[in-house]
Structure formats: structure tokens, C-alpha cells
Length: 265
Length: 217
Image (tube, rainbow over all chains, first blue to last red):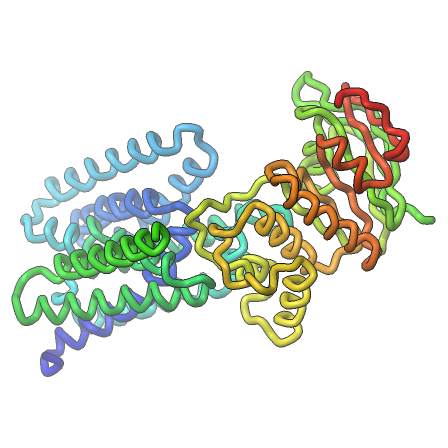
């Protein structure tokens, strides 16, 4: 399998993406941002379609839209009374825009499928390098604010009481989240990127009792998921995203029911 | 004895509604003061001003230079599924990479608040009293010499209340921490506090707890 350059590229890219999404995801779950992550992936879809229309790489369109979107949506979810409805409205608007850009760009349906469901097997060496660099930037962003981010994400009121600049932390985190959505979408697609951002960390919530332990578990399940997905995709020729989704859901459900059984008995 | 806090003509208005007007009081070093008053009289608003989380409409306040302030807020978002252990929760108020001095400081506060044995219990699974002691331990990590607790006993059963109050009394007695304890529970304040501040109808009264008149009990 590793004899093929495209498989080596796919493994390298997905390894970095899994580490990034696994790490960022712990904070997505702690901050109750799962819905926001999902909306950002739809905004990312519109961005990718916009890029196709312009004739540039989808990743850049995605980055542009998610970065702008994360600030806008983040503001809304922080300050709006109608948080869920307003996010739904934005999500609807951008999904519509995505369809429009694809239609007017005259791209064939393969493009749409790739954007929505991922196309890691097709990523070239230059693409891998972009993803690796972006992943490292996201991780550096997270680590540079980690103490305040930990405090704010896991004890918002306590963080406020200790003078943590929670709004600033929130903005930095939204930027990191937008970038994670953009790069995660390259492998599982924008429709399913929230799998990597929410399911491994949700599983980790039941297994770890400290933030480093939760990040370790989350990254572990994200990595196993993408590696297994790539391997099974390679031998069966079925979509990688399918295997990743099934694996992450299965692990989550097993952990969840184990937790329920343990606590009921 | 010197004062740790002086409040001068403090006034707070929201639009046209005046929460309180021209409050004047001082807190003595090493004192244990209950901030009393019915629900909705602005106790938490006053605390938020003292914590610099709200700007007063008028007036000033000043903590003494040597004051290191600790604060335990009224509400926390800790549900039954909250994953972090008690120790990890307290450690949120410490650097991510914990050197031996930090670990030692966390251990000391765990022991002080009688949580060391259950330090690996998840916060979500801890009892109300254990959670409240963990909030206190987290604030104590700053090594404060003045601590403000906002309705710390509000949701606790009588035994947990007594345990927390004994702990607070111990902190005051042994470590000379000045305590400002916000509550609407007058009988509890009577049992454990020396002084009171009574906030009602926008005015504040100050005195010794034993002299407190049962205005609204």
C-alpha cells in the first residue's frame, strides 16, 4: 500500500489532520461548539465552491469563508438570544450559496462530491505540505493560549472571575476552529468534518479526567479512524469517509453505553 | 487593625433603575463579614463591581496594596457529565505544564479543603459540598489574603453547609484570610460570621453579627 506515492501522501496528510482535529475537538465539545463546527463546515462548502468558480484551490476558498464565518457566527452565538435559529439561517444561506457557485462555475458533479465527502486519495505532495503547515499553525495557536483556553473552555465563570480575557481567547479559538474545519474537510469532506471535530473528543470525555488525557484519547481515536479508513478504503475501493464515520460512531456508542452501564449498576 | 477595603459613595444604576446609592463601608483585615440582604438587592452586583467585572455608575472603592484577592462566584457550569477530575479542575487555575512547586501547591489546597482522598473523582460526579470546596480550592491556589464567596452554601444540605463554613472559619483563623461571605441565610451567618453588611433598598448597614436585627428573616 505504501508503495504508492498517493497513499503515502494521504497517510501523512490525514495523520496531521487527525492530530489537529482531535486536539481542537476537545475544546469544541467543552465549549458546546458542535453545532457551530457543523455550520462552519457548511460555510466551508460554500467557500470551496466559490474557489472552484474563481478557479483557485478549494482549500483557500474554504479558509477564507470559514475564517470570516467563524468570527460572524461566533459573535452571533456569543451575543444573540436566538443563537440556534440565527446559526441555522446562516447555515442555510451558505449551503445555498455553495450550490449556486458550483452551478455557475459549470464544474461537474465530481467536484461537489469531492468537496462534500472528501478526496484525500487525490491529494498531491504540494497539497500535503499545505495541510501539514496549516495543521502546525493551528496547533501552535492552541498551545500559545492553552492555559487561558483550558480555563475558559472548562470553567468559563471561573476564568472570568480570574480575569481571563475570555473574548480574546474565544476569537483566537474560532480562528483555529475555522482552519481545522478547512483542513479536516480535505479528508472527510465538509459534510462530515464535524465527525473528526466532535466524535473522538466526545468519546474522550468519558475516558479522560484531565485535559492532556482527553486530548490524547481524542487524537488516538481520530488517528485510528483515519488510518483504518484509508486502509479499508484502499483494499475495498469504497469511500474512506464511510469507514471513518462508522468507526468513530461505533467507538463513541461503545464508550457511551459502557459509561451508562457502569453508572447504572 | 487596618482596613483591607474601603468603599466610598458607591452607586450603581441600570438605565433609570438604581440598584444602590452612596454605599460606604470598610472591611477590617482578618475579619469575617457576612454580606446579607434579600434576593435581588444587588449583592452580586456589588461583588461584581469589587471584582472589576462591572463599572460602577459613581463612587470608588480601594483595596489595600497588600491585598491578594480570591473570589468564588455564585454559579458554575458543571453538569453531571463534566469530565475533569477535582484535581484537574482546581489545576485550571495554574500553568498547563505543572512543575513540582505547582503540584505541591495543588496538593496543599486539596488537603486543606479535605478533597485529597477524592481528587480523582470527576467534578460531575462530586456532591454539591465537594464541588463547592473545589471552587474554593481553585481560588485558594492564588494564595489570597482576602476571599469573597458568593452564595457558596445556597444549594447545599445542612451538613455540607456546616463543613464548608468550618473550613472557611479555619482559613480565617489559621491563615488570617479576610472573608466576605455573601448569603441570604441569616442563621448561618449568625453561627459563623463576626460582622455583617446588610444591603436592602439601595442602602447598606454595617455592624456586629450578634447585634443584627431580624429585619427580614
